[in-house]
Amino acid sequence: MVMTAVARGLEIVCIQVEADVSNGMPLFEMVGVLSSEVREAKERVRTALHNCGYRIPPKRITINLSPADIRKSGSGCDLPIAIAVLAALGEVEAKALEDTLILGEISLSGKVQPVHGILPIVAKAKECGMKRCILPFCNRMEAKRIPGLQIWAVEDLRELVEYLNGRPYQEKPSINIEETGIWESEPDFAEINGQDALKRACEVAVAGMHNFLMIGPPGSGKTMLAKRIPGILPPMTAQEQLEVSKIYSICGLLPKNQGLIQKRPFRNPHHTISPNGLSGGGTIPQPGEISLAHRGILFLDELPEYRKSTLEILRQPMEERQITLVRQSGAYRYPSDFMLVAAMNPCKCGYYPDRTRCNCRDADIARYLGRISKPLLDRIDICMEAPLIRYDELAQKGRGESSAAIRSRVAAALERQQARFQGCGFFYNSQIPSKDIAVYCGLDGSQKNYMKEIYETMGLSARGYYKILKTARTIADLEDCEKIEDRHLKEAVC
Image (cartoon, rainbow, N blue to C red):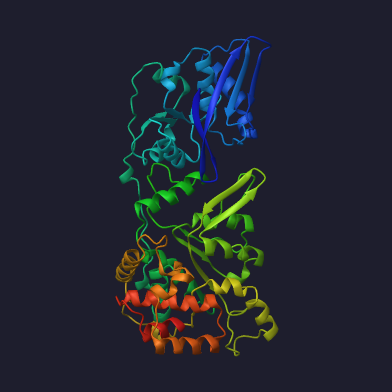
């Protein structure tokens, strides 16, 4: 018996591969609820064994992949099937396969090809008590990020058989993981002249991981600001790096010869993206953009240009920080804890309310803005106007505040939140549950009267009221204030 694993979303299921060689009509049969790529493995395996010099007798060969009630997909079952057949034929010692998980695709020549999802599979192998993982040489860097396991990275089927039959494993030289990260320099906030209010809004949004919307005419710097937000994000923790890297590993997007992803994701899908592209899709659903943005930024430029059905998908993941995709083969759950940053024009031409430049009819403006539903807007904590930059701001010689200076304040505010919410199940001010608002965002008598007036004047919803308090809590954290003060509330209302 050979142990392997398959991915069902981010869930990893261990699979037992059993092979039986018996007398009867020559046949190579595979059972166990198999996808097309797994069923085709028998042809690859049979040809690879023949080309590697192993003789398959004219007998009945039966391969069983259990548990039988779980659909197996992916090309990683090729190598374990080949080893299971060789073990049944006596070419490999069965004892050598104990506490070992094998994974890999094989070519017709017997070369072991890389597969997706190595990182979560190796983590699952360690969790299940495996002592050794055998996998493709090209996937070795991913596997080595999970400590505590013996990793055999092989390039050829014959090579693996020799190792299993007693030849000492020799690790081939590889590139140092720490030296492979070639980072591009981040765009800096210091490069943007003017827009001080928008920069402040960006700082507050990141300091509490609040969803953020910018509205303004073309050329006001909305996209430039959004693309500089990653430069003020705090570094990911080791656990967050592992979470994000698992998602990218499943999609085959983890960079080669590199360890875990260390930079927070910044995803910027085009407005023509389909609902499945945003949420994830397929017979066996792959992560969509909202999952690829996990622990990072999802930037939607020209927000009203997205299809309304696509935007409405965001509502549930923004609340629950995960998305569940249900298919005939089962339910697949992906994390989607992202910060939404969006930008839009106030009308189709982009210049409303400047009637000297905007010729849009009132009905057209209402229709354009109506593409963003109220429930979705209710989930955006901070909305900010982006005015056109004045000439004196554009021509100023001095440089603005750098991203490094802003990032230091953001990091300090986030540290205060981590200490405050330790053991609560959430980490940022934007995630405070409504039942705990009074605990973490308490107001005195005059502040309650002020918020009552704002609530009635602005016609806020309950969610809108709570998001003002959460934003005020973040502004207070940026100033290292234990209590929310009047100026914090007023800035949050603005």
